[in-house]
Amino acid sequence: MKFYKILIIIWLFIFSIAASKAEHFLNFWEFITIYFNTIWSQIPQSYKYIKLNFKNIDPNSEVYSALQKWVYMDMFPNKKIDLHLDNKVSQKQVVSLVKKNFWINFYYNTWLVTTSLLKEILFTLQNSDLEKISTQDEVMLDVYDILSNDYFFQENIDEEKMTYWAIKWLVNSLEDPYTQYFDPEEAKQFNDELNWDFEWIWAYIEKNKKWETIIISPIKWSPAEKAWLQAWDIIIRINNKDINIDENLSNIVKKIKWPSWSEVIITVKRWNKEIDFTVIRDKIKIINIEAEQLDNNSCYIWIHMFTRGIDKEFDKIIKELKNCNKYIFDVRNNPWGGLFEVSEILWHFLQKGEISSVIKSLNTTENLIPTDKTPKIDKNIIILINKWSASASEIFAWTIKDYIPSTILIWEQTFGKWSVQSVRNYKDWSILKYTQSRRYTWKSQRNIDKQWISPDIKIIDNPDTQVDEIFEFIKKLKF
Image 1: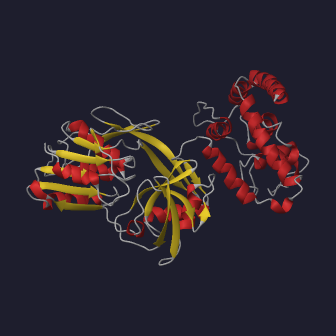
Image 2 (image 1 turned 180 degrees about the vertical axis):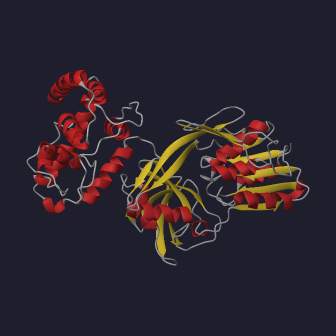
Image 3 (image 1 turned 30 degrees about the horizontal axis):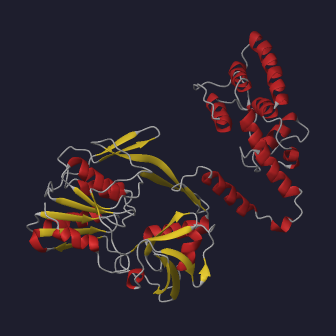
C-alpha cells in the first residue's frame, strides 16, 4: 500500500509538469498503463501467469503487465479481440471504472480524459482511506491464489462450490434472516415453493431458533393437517433421523419433500411429549380464503395466504355475505403475502384517498393507494392474530385497527416482520433475495419490524385438543 502511494505521488509530479506545458488527452494505452500499474501495484503476483489472448499486444511492453492486472481483477474478459488501445478514453469510462473499484464518485462530462482529470482522481485516491479496503481484497485474493496453487489436496477443490460459499458468507454476514443467496439447486427449490409446484406435507415450517424447527401451521386440507400436526410442534426427527442443530432450513425441507403418495415419518415434540406422525406426501389445491355465515348475523372469514388474486376472491366473498353485523377475520398462522394484494383488500375498510401503507426504501418513499371498493366495512370487526401472523397479515390487522379503533384484536402477539424483499435472478440460475425496504402504517407511521402487534384480548388455546378455543370464544363475544 505504501509503495502504490509513492507511485501515485510520482505520477502526480509527472502530470503536474505535463499539464503545465499542454493539456494532453489520454488514449487507452496510456490510461491502462498508468491506472493499473499504479493503483493495483500490490495485488498477488499470480497475475503474471495470465496469458493474454488480446491481439497485437507485445508481451514485453509495459501495457501487457497492466492488462494482466485488468484481467486478474475481472475488469474485462480475456478474449481474442483487438482492444484499439490507441483510441481516446472518455471521462465516463474512467469514472465508472474508479467507482466500480473504490465506490468514489467523480463529476464528468462528455469530454475525453485529460492529464489534469487523472491527476485529480489519483490525488483523491491518495488521500482516501483505502488501506483497509485494499488490504481485505488482497487477503481474499491471496487466500484464493494459495489454495489454487499450493493447497495439497487439489482434488478437493471445486471452484464453483468455493464461489457459491463465498457469496453465501458475504450475504450471511449481514445477519438478516430475510436476505439469502440460493445456489442453482436451492434456487429451484425456492421457485418451486413460490409456485407451489412440489409434493410434500404442506405445512409452513420455520427455524424459530438455531436449534428448533417449528411447524408454523398446517395448510388447510393438507396431509399435515389430516395427520394432526399442529402449529408450535417442534420437529426433532425425520424418518427416525435426528435433525442436526446446525442444519439449515433448506436441507430440512428437502428431507420432507418427495414424490406424491410416499410416506414420511415426522417426530415432533409437543408440550415435552415426543409424538410420531406418518404423513403421506401429496400435491393439493391451495385454498387462500374461506367464509362462513355464523349465527347472530356474524360472518367469519379465514384468510390463509395473501397470494396473487386473493383481493378478487375477497371482493366476491364480501359481496356474497348477507346481513353481516359482525365480521371476524382470521389471519392466524398466515405468515406472508403480497403488498398489492393486502393493500387492495384494505380498501374495503378505508375511505377514498386514504393510504393503506408506506414503503420506504433507501432512496424513495412510496404510498400505497388502492382502488376504491364497496361495500365498506367500518364497524364490529374482530381480527384473530397469533405469533405466526406476519408481514401482510400484520399490515392487514394494524391498518384496520389504525383507521377503525373499535376493532378488537384477539389471541396473542404477532411475529413482527414489516420488511420487504426483492429477488434478483442470475444467468447461472442462482438467486439473491434481499431486503429492499420497510413498511409503515400511514396513519400512525408505525413500523413493527422485529417488534410485534399486541392483542386487545389474550386467550390460551389448548394444543392437546382439536377444539379451537379462540373460535368458540369469539362466537359468544358481544360488542
